Length: 270
Picture 1: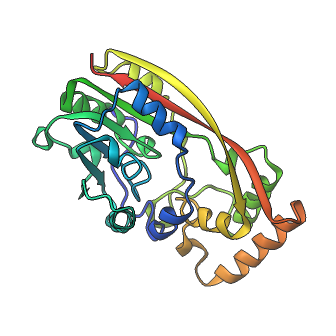
Picture 2: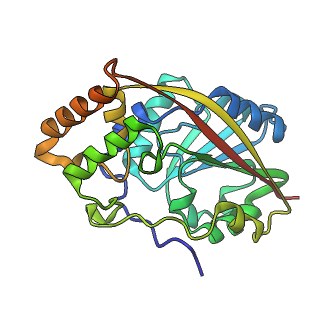
């Protein structure tokens, strides 16, 4: 019995370019925490599942001998490759595959990371397979960010979502070519992990400041599953003009700042 259906290839269709440029980067304190908790020393191998545009794999390039970034979306991997070249990261291989299909042939890993992707996976199956791929001293880090504008108390985020709803409808779209509807997880990552083969787990929280301009926030929206560029289609210019006007009424400076919490769910094989 799994908690998430099979992967939908339309989930982030057309979002990769925006994802690489406008999704918030993980702050250095997250990578410092991973280095400390998992005793990273530049050796061993990292597996980054649901790697997207490489927002975890690339910053960790100096902490491992070899890194594999795995994602089912070819466009995301193309963006990741471009970002890796720009960063002169030569020890990362990008593999197009679903996390559920990872096999022992991939070899052993010191650490497996999963960023903003675990909720899209068949979590029980993935955890079972990952446990077998880790070295005896290895571990898993699931990085949860809380930047969901649909459930934000910030007036400017509420305003942005009101504009999205005005153009795309009241329901939050997710996959199925824009016809799917978002369903929140019934079981938390922590509960799923507690029932997995992993022996120990712990949660660590960090916070950081993030500032947006109107243009960067529009780019962020286009990186999400609920506001893909194709959803607004030929109305794009009108949508963006409406969003800019509405946001400037909330904050005339056009600069929006928030504090974003990040939870690192850490687990160890032994």
